[in-house]
Image (tube, rainbow, N blue to C red; front, side):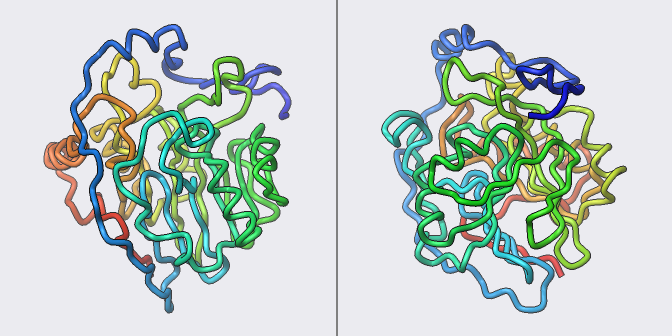
Length: 314
């Protein structure tokens, strides 16, 4: 564990700015609120990821917060989640309404996994077990998560604190702050850190935000690491705001994060796969379009892509 800092008191991690997430005692109140009905399943055909040629990176949305990032140095998965449920033992928790857009068998050799935090919809042990057997990747994650990751059979794990660069990854990677929390159950809250990552492919910077509420660290990422060429920003799972404001950005806040980062392009994620909160399945897309119009940001600058769709950074 790191020495005490602005986000670690010697026992637990915390967010140095902004409101803390609601306690577990608030969950029953949340469960009493009625959410929108989602479709039981959206049947979409799987896709094969493109072959990267001379681009710095090709980024394919697999689902939720799972992207395949193909670079010359490594094929990378972010927060890999292939299970049908986001919960313990793949038996409890929200059920996915879309299959992973790229089947596991169609992935190119994955040598690196970026793992933002330990929530079940981002840190899925069955998926990590499959990746360990198939690819034996290095997992780069935040402080306090290595023991959990190793329990899935991953041999090589590197833990980073905020702003710490990776020593083991085959390309430059720096961990960045996020405003969130961690827990696998009711008794381990904030024992492990959460965050995002900036990676450099060629001379292009790609930012994967992980899970985060809006807070004042986004300008600091730009100031310390430079303008971002492509940002992967969460836009879903944000209602009701009394509970989610300190946990997840809504689309309007994601647009502000895009502007804070001075990102050339941003792609929305964390929507349309698991019903984690109360908004309708298409509401993040509608709200993002409205927020972009209100701030004068074009769809070429910030948009969503289809499940299985790819964008390449030259």
